Image (cartoon, rainbow, N blue to C red):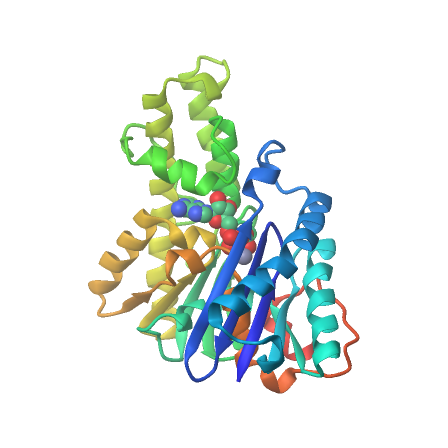
Length: 343
Ligand code: KG4
Ligand code: ZN
């Protein structure tokens, strides 16, 4: 079965063709980062309009590169939610129209399920069951993943997501959006021990987390360093120390919680998915910490960590039994992953 996947939940238009026998045949992505940069965050209306512009050329490009005719696509998967309503509607509308025109089934996929299953795109894929850390701009959650569709939430952030904290810290330091890669790059030249920052909830006996206090602590340290002035104008060396200290605090908390998640679930594999999962320091720290426990960490290829069509095509392929041919479509801007069975 060849499944065409369409991702339009936020600020990336992603399209891919996945073959249930041969794996990923082709994928293409258009990032709207440059479009939203001037606003310091995603502008929903601009995002929707750009998806409209990009999605059909990307579909043509993917089919050309895979050398597959549109008629030879067996099913179409799209991101049904969660995400921006207008942006989701673009993918849902295009997928349903294509399905109707071709007489092929259409399946709406949960965006986080796409992230969570994205390590299955790799050659060395983890076997079920495993623990998953979903760490993105909107989510920081621990799941026990027993099988496709069988997800138990083990812990969540109580306020900001880790990626959101990266983005806000970057904004404070005058770095470009999105903040994660910018902070990570700046941190490479900094000293993580030069500035003391808290490790919120690291000792709490659960898998919950909190990153909003950490973001405020960086703000206070930055203002001190700037003697009350604008932290964005601090010398690069000081900004690098702040970035390194912030990144180290997030990594320390996530590593401690990862070990706890493996303990409470009894699993020996950890999957890390979502945009912050591209962070090199986080990856290295998790690999080291898990090696001491005889546990193993699995990461998607960094290009499949952030939003992409490949994970939607692949997750859609796992969900084909839910595919429909009625072509009426709806989106689910708010949709807990643990409720995927009901939609
Ligand atoms: O999964 P994603 O593309 O979008 C959703 O939020 O669903 O994740 C985007 C987030 C942003 O907050 C971005 O700053 C963060 O992932 N991010 C990173 C890195 N690359 C992206 N955070 C830390 N280090 C990175 N290398
Ligand atoms: Zn995402």
